[in-house]
Amino acid sequence: MNDLVLKGGRVIDPAQSIDRVTDIAFTGGKVAAIGDGLAAKETRDVRGKVVCPGLIDLHTHVYWGGTSLGVAAEPLARNGAVTTFVDAGSAGAGNFAGFRKHVIEVSPVRILPYLNLSFPGIFAFSKTVMVGESSDLRLLDMRECARIASENRDLILGIKVRVGKGTSDMTGNMPLEMAIEVAEEVGMPVMAHLDNAPPSRRDVLKLLRPGDILTHCFRPFPNAPATADGRVHEEVLEARARGIIFDIGHGGGSFGFKTTRAMLKNGFLPDVISSDIHVLSIEGPAFDLVTTMSKFLVLGVDLPTVIRLSTLNAAKAIGKPDLGTLRTGATGDAAVLEIKDGSFEYLDVIGERVVGNQRITAAGVVLAGRWWHPR
Image (cartoon, rainbow, N blue to C red; front, top):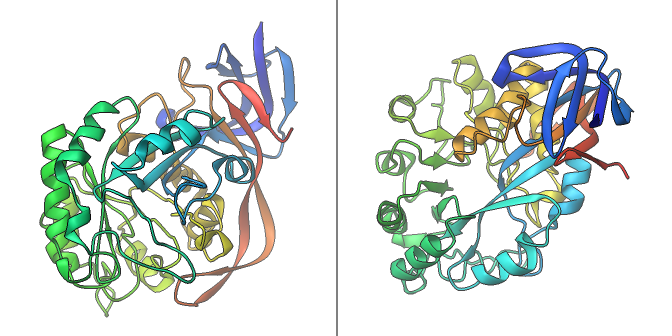
């Protein structure tokens, strides 16, 4: 007998090209079956709702209590149907042990971190204090970063580095070059943040390697991926052809409707949709992953594609094929979503407002094969 069945929902699993109204069963923490007329010890009626793989938020900051920008993962998971949080370098070598012991290991939801090149991680990020951790090269200890990454391979996905005027100041691209050298030493990818120049988008992209991630990829001018007349910059097209992964990382300063419309018009979808949720962006304009997903929905991206960019593609980006799918035997994580109709206002990071007629909301979460939310 199955442990749990979700009955009558619209099951969307891009990994299997499934999009139909049916049932899905979970047993022993895994996906057991997809089909009609399934039975279980516990049954949940999800008619009129969408069932998809558990959402993966590729860019978050959930070292709550250990860094000034961290937010708590559990309420975000319940309110946003996220079952895997990828922490984008909140902790560095100097405070990763605390992140692991006090947050990751006790969390009911999965947290997979990138390790910040900077020894203290992102240590000064708030409404009143903002110091870029890559702006002082004395904080960038390559050997310690490599040591901690190697000793925590069961968790750490790669090396995170932030470059740009607001984060690396006049050190320019040097922190990125150092992060790539560490990544090559330990055999991991890099996730690179880019804000305002210096360095330029062109200078960053030419250093990234296949499988590395450029986050904040649809940021507004300056360092936007689209030209003023709406074309995609050649170096962006070339980077995609080389296998660079383009991640949204909305946050409080890194998503523009103008840029996104231009990129979509050119047929350039991001590889992954993520929220970059932190202590400032959680108050808007990002709010959470489902809000970020909704912005793409109202800009004309179809629902199965939006789900693919928030599940399957995110799982591929972090090398976790057991996540992001509802295939039989896969990890039993699922999101139950409701697509609400009405009039909804959305805001980008520079103040442009878009009114759409749909919003994606969380209606339930299955975690390790068990109904987890709402209680």
